[in-house]
Image (cartoon, rainbow, N blue to C red; front, side, top):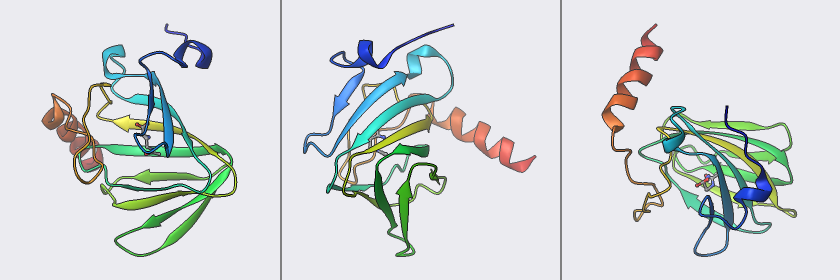
Length: 145
Ligand code: 9YT
């Protein structure tokens, strides 16, 4: 069993901040933990806008505090986000994530897991996992059942 607190993650290398200050990500579970997913708490700053497209990852995001919205850049649909709302980026969906009047606190899970050493490409995506093809094959297999 692994037990971690936010206090020990804050200020450590598991806490990462966007270069433009739009978000803070606290990585409670990373690839090296061997769980098959990574698990983060992300704070999205009020009034911010971030363009994201995780072309190498699936991400589930559950809001537990604050409010904002997500704009699906394929369909143009805008979905409000507040405590109790989940979105699943299962189609590598390009989107705009906007903070509302208060900071949003989001709980995020990534597959493949984030290693913590990713670099961002021009689309704001993270680079592929070293075993990207294996993770894609497992997802495909579980969808077929
Ligand atoms: C919700 C979201 O995608 N925010 C950007 C940061 C990312 N979740 C991360 O690295 O934790």
